[in-house]
Length: 196
Image (cartoon, rainbow, N blue to C red):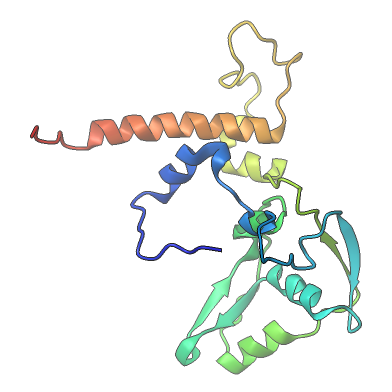
């Protein structure tokens, strides 16, 4: 897999919006040469019981999905919130739950991270699954969707009762509206470039 170094994007939100459907949330789920898929990128979805007998790779995947404080170079510590990257692992993005802050030492943070995970069932989606957002997330993200009679996303002449949008389709429509708004704001906010 190739990596790009030194490339900076000024407005990440706009870049993602403009990419639309061409943005790949799970690039490592694609079949490429010289790449063996991790066990959490299987062809079929499955539920596994997490415990001491579980394969190390799947135990690591379970840790990817748990909020924790990560210890870095020189004992620096940063929060890791998996709900922010869950779509990269095929999980629908949801609202985060409350996490009790743990402001201990790097040793405490490391012990919390490496604490065994036992007796929980873990859902592993198929690598072909296209993640989206939950309805709860969408309602939180755009409170105007909760208003009854809000037909801003329904084309004229269509009945909202007859043509219900899926959450994914609605999110794409909202993204398109946001892109249009951002482009218009950028156009109005940027000073004109001198002609050469």
